[in-house]
Amino acid sequence: MKSFELVLFADYFQFYIQDEAAKGDLSQAWNEEATDRLLALAPGTVGIGTVRNIDVPVTVDFLEHAPEDEFSDWDHVVEAGLDVTSGRIVIAGCIDYFPDAKRVEVPPGVYRVRVSYGALDTLSEDGLSGDDRYRLQLWPAASTAVHILKQRLK
Image (cartoon, rainbow, N blue to C red; front, side):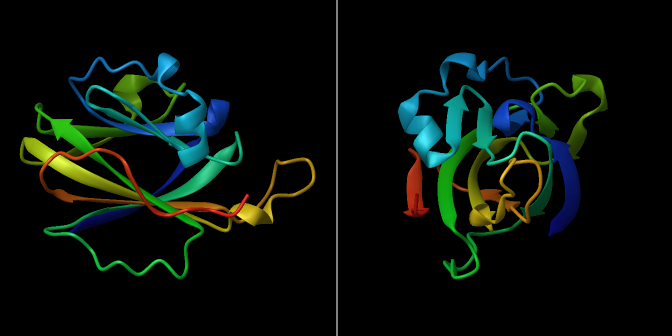
């Protein structure tokens, strides 16, 4: 299992994970439904919504199979499919310089991305600080529609 921790600049309240070769454009994908579920999709791209538009901590785990459904430490959990044709996944903030973004080599194929959102209610009054955290878990799996596994309280 590959695992690493990142701090990503979540400008526009988002960061993304995508196939390196994808030309997916999330600009039209952030509709009301995507905003509510904190996740938007474009071909080869998954956009992850955040509650702050500043640096956020992100943990990424590449797994061999689906993880256990243990959500007690998380406020919101959602899954989606990600097609990876290039064999390289890019993880970045939406305004990061693409050539410098984090890359991970994986076998080409279809992956399931589970995004877990924690401590979403810890934001300061000005929205600049908090203990919110984000975990991405990926494993090979058949492509699927978006599934909300745990809905956050609003």
